[in-house]
Structure formats: structure tokens, C-alpha cells
Length: 400
Image 1 (cartoon, rainbow, N blue to C red):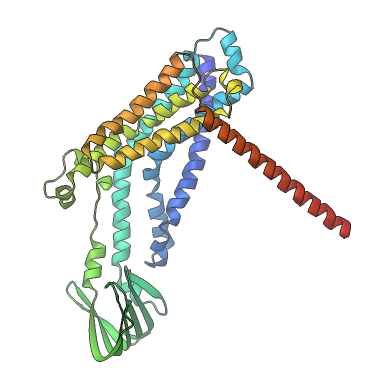
Image 2: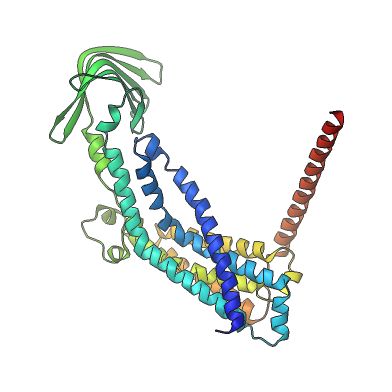
């Protein structure tokens, strides 16, 4: 590799790592916040929560890596053009391959990394994640005996224990059950206990009432001396680990068990997942070609209506959306599997044609004009807002 190629590789790699870390952090944070109920509803420790949060990372890496590549390539080439480095390379007689080769080597390394994570690490991380979530929700007995806290047992079912009494008895039991459509049930008992018999667990409530209310407004109150509320169904359902096609290893997807109930119901989803895994790795190469087609020529930055980085990301988002659309449709319609592979192949072919023909890939004129006008209006509004705050600050100081 020539000195210039190593220089381009080093700059692009630095930007790639920075973009990857920041993008991973943002996406990971949004995913973690969606799972905060693991602590609030299940009463698990912070260590379990962070373990589950760490297992999310492999699932977002294959999605984030291609965008880190397009940001790295577009930003690196844009900066080199602003510093007239691309113009100097062209004037020195350097071939276009001098720029293309280090970029494609970086994209190839990113593709291999994505493929390894998507087909090797992610399935095991997903399985471990589901096991942790299932075990945390199955630990129901330790949850419901906590005093003074509402606990969600199931969708529409909440339970609260007022206090713990001697001899493993419970006091002030409150249960709200709205699982049956159109009927709300509220149980209250002065005391009770959890009775275990083998795998069966029953909440025995003593000296209480049941309030039954319908949508029509009918209300009935039933008093009871003792009432048994079965908890076994929730415990067994929570402890079962349901593995979806995304949670399975690639080897299993290629040869699933005939006894797999999910496979028996929807075998097409297993095949669709295989197609997605075997095509998703290629988007790093596709996005690198798009960025090269947009920003790889010294003239592109001066002739472009908007910044090449914005153009590259916009085109990459559109291509990736087509890939997600095809993958979603392939879950139900097998013919869309051709589109799963066709989207990256066609996008690569188009970008390669722009590169070989020495043309610059740009957004449609209408899009570019709209984005330019929007940016201009936003900039004018921001400037006016800053001036207004500056005037208010000056008048406030004058009054003081």
C-alpha cells in the first residue's frame, strides 16, 4: 500500500471509529431506556439490568456499522477536498484507484466484522438476553412479598402486599385484574399466604371482598372467607424461553428442528432471517461505494448543491430503508427474498457506474433545492433568535 493510501486509510479509520462509538452509544441508549421496566417492574438488581443492556450491543452493531462507514468515507474525502488534497492527487497523475482501494479495504473489514457479529455473536447474545429476562420475571415470589409496592404480574394484572406478618403470612393484599375485556375485578383481603405444592403456587386470601365492575356500570361486591388465586400459570409462562428466528444461530436456521413449534407455524420466517443475515453484511461495501460516488471526485464538493456528507447519508438511508422493507415483506412473501439481495446489488451497481464514468452522484435537484432552502430558513431563524436574545440581554444590563 502506498503512502497516500495509508494516509487515506488512517484518516478514514479514525473517523469511522469515532462515528461508530458515538452512533452505538446513541442507539444503545434508546434501546436500554426501552428496557428500564426490567428493574422497575421486576425488581431486579442494577447488575442484571446492565448485563441485559450489554447483550443488546451485538444486535445493533450490524445496523450501525454501515452508517459509520458512510460517515467516515464522506467526511474524510470532503475534508481532503476542502484542503485541496484531492486536487493535488489528480494533478500529480494519481489514479482513482489510489482513493478507492483504501476506502474499500476499510469497508471490507467492516463487512467482515458485521457478518461475524450478525451470524456468530448476536444469536447467542439474544438467547442469553431472553434467558435473563425470563428468569427475572419468573422470580415472582420474591417480588410480590415486598411491602407497599405495586407489582405487575401480567398485562392487566397488578398486586400489592401491605405488610409481611409472622409465620410467612401477608397482610393487606390488593389485586387489580382487568385482563378480561369489559370487566374490572378488584380483590382485597386482610391477610393471606402463598401456598406451594410442587410446581403449583397459590395466593390464599382470607377475609376479603371482590369488587366486580363492568363497562355498563354494573357493580357487584362479593365477600369471602377464603379465596385461592392461582399464580402457577404466570410462573410457568414467565420461566419459558421463547426463541424467535432472530434468536437462533445461523446453523440452526439452515437446518431447524422439525419439532420446533415456531418453525411449524411460520417456516418462511426462518428462511427470511437467513436471507437477511447473508445480505446485511454487504451494506458497508454499498455505503462506501455511495460515499465514493458522491465525494470521491475533487469537483464534487464545489459543484454539489449541498454538503456531500448530507447527500451520502440521505442516499444511504433510502437504500437501507429499501433493505428493511424487503426484509419485512420477505417474512410473509417468499418472492421478496430476491429484493433482499437485489437492493444492495443494484445500489452497488449504480454507485460503481458513477465512479467508473467519473460522474458525481447527487440528490435530485428538487430535493437539493428544498434542503438548501430549508437550511437557509433555519439559519436565518437561528440568527434572528440569537439577535433577539442578545438585545434582551443588553436591555436587561442597561436597566440594571
